[in-house]
Length: 138
Ligand SMILES: [Zn+2]
Image (tube, rainbow, N blue to C red; front, side):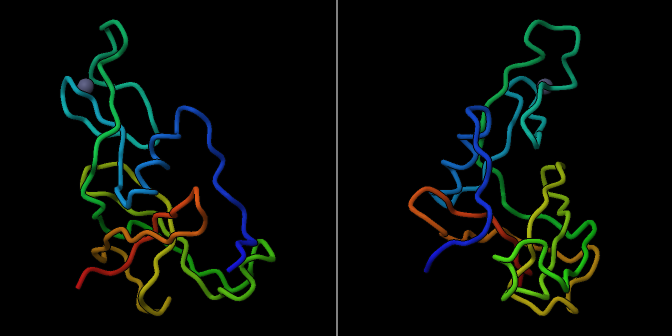
């Protein structure tokens, strides 16, 4: 299969996230001091007055959440997606709290509902990348 869609933009801040995806692990940024989770990578809001704003690390997250908002795309925004329409682009409220954007797969677009429980599934698209997508649980 030839991948003809855009690839993720990777800089050194986000590289550990994509390395985890390659291992089929869903990682989020977490504060070692208080356990707060972040996406995208950020400083912990709970330590504004401390040096380094907390002690951050990438940690394995549950990969579960609920559909927070979504829309169904009937027209591809990029020619690489022309065979995929209609597809669902969604905001997923992760169990850890952060909101993550991805596609919902594994069901018909019309079956996607706000609040629907979903879990991550990884699509291997190249030697370097596995994309995190979400499917209904159960
Ligand atoms: Zn913290």
